[in-house]
Image (cartoon, rainbow, N blue to C red; front, side):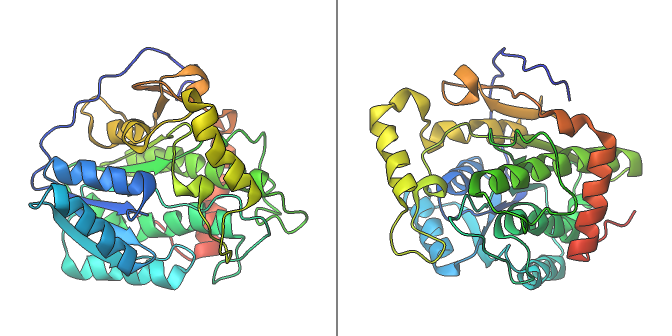
Length: 319
């Protein structure tokens, strides 16, 4: 990837996806829901992977209200549990259907206090990066079985950290919510880039790229979660800017466009990073190349993160 953010617009055309199978994590709301709806609308069969099967079914019903012919399956996936990730992978492996597209969308953003996954990893790093790393490893045989599979990782404009402390990726020495979020999203981008490199080197025929939604109106920013019954003060202030500063924000249908381009456009390439075309990649219409964080080009950092991720998850990508 070039670090230069080329500002020219990229034309988004969604082809006929009939016969394709897509897996979307966090598909019950926000960007994941928008992506699942768009893919189903183009004829793809979509697995809605959701932590809450009930919310996943509600999302599927919502899609079917406007698209009765939508081919949707809801499956439980809790990325904060490597047991759940393995079970999800085993279930799809037992079905034996090649996977044409995996969109790694689900995420956790800035819990006020440091929280842990089932295995004891810091929640944001564990869910956003390690959970998706393990998931993709479990799905790799099915992705390789497809004629031309893609893996799209959802990044963030918050992924601007200047370095990774490999001795403290879990923020045990001092937890700052936004920094921990930025580290997790940077790790996802490093993974996306390294996955594409390894795929090409090993002949896996799996294209890996990434996209970010700028600032989009989703409950990732404003929802009541992390054990709270109501949104934080910061969340309420964020929601207020949707009205006060509307030029900064994208509706979901606009926010999904970079990821949709990465997922289905014939022109989208492996190793690329896409984002909104607007000022500072926060809003505006359309899709363009996103600015690439410096560390994404550091081969040694990508290698170290990959090896650390294999060690922490116990998931190894075999040739």
